[in-house]
Image 1 (cartoon, rainbow, N blue to C red):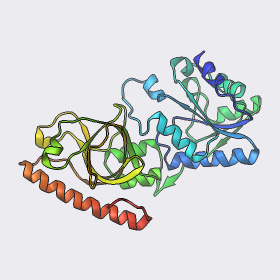
Image 2: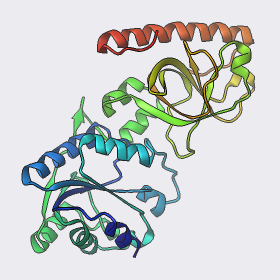
Image 3: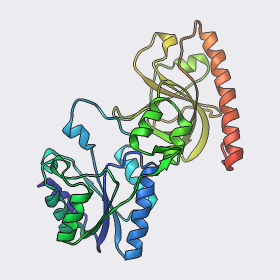
Image 4: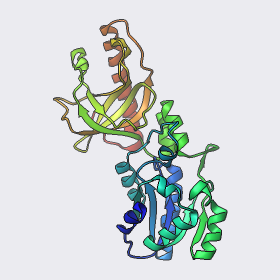
Length: 317
């Protein structure tokens, strides 16, 4: 069985307190549960652990709605480690795994991960047909020798912080609220690829970012961003959309680095999205577009300067 092969590679050195989930976004709601898990494990002298999945269960169980990821797996693991989780177990979610009963699944966690307790959210369920809800897991825990603790969700301004809430807010382009729900800027990462050089012709050469097709994106528009090249933070403006002034086409992510000279190397680039400036729209002439880009740049500088003063961030001016 594939799950046993993957679990057998982990080998934690002592007993564990675990939670299970996709944790897409590792937003403040996730961090609320994970911090509790970490602190409880340390108090008991156990290891804190997260069991997560390479792909979202929905992608395996339902092919009707394509689910876009807030973070790729590499970023998700990095964020989980940043919370202070000791053991991160990544499993392949397969139809075989989906058919395991709740008892069978938790038995595997006990056998391979030395699980002594589970920390879950109120809506959590595992096992075939989601039979292993909190009540059922508590019964299994009494029988099999592990604890179950339900952590209430984090609520901000009357709204439960969830991955769905972050996705919905992201689609609206409300980057300030995404930041509030996530506890950090929303980031996009990908390799810089060659484009049609149209930005260079206009006098604003851009770096075109190639992100994975399953990556969730903000709604089309122009954004204030901070780009990172060799760990240096550079103020920038990013357009996400189809560039309707030039007839439209496939969706692109173009970043103009405000004070960067020379060619952007074709390597992995990360951008943090700070604020939305405006909708993407069609201009009558190239000159009208250029004038708007200049206004976008001026506004971006004002926004980034304000953030720098508020937070002591040393953005390059």
